[in-house]
Length: 85
Image (cartoon, rainbow, N blue to C red; front, side, top):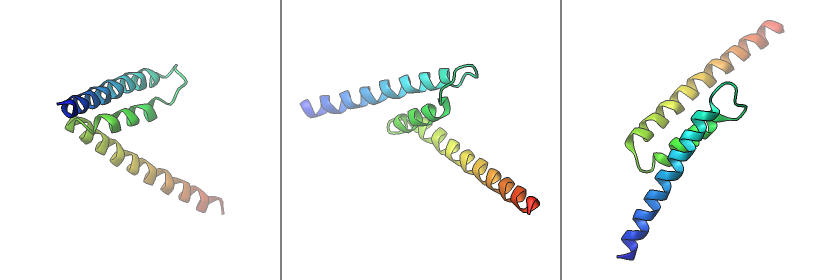
């Protein structure tokens, strides 16, 4: 019985922490607030992905878009480096 209570408690804590971080990250994403909001949102999604499929899908999408952005930036940096030589 106490094992079930422990699992439910862990789930509730994960959800509360994840939602709190998600809200804080969204507030920090406002342009006038000088904090790393996107990183907090990603951390919140990682926590919520343990319990929710929607968070898992959104986190996968963010990772995919981040990889595409990284590839574009590396390509642009390489093109700029070859132009300056």
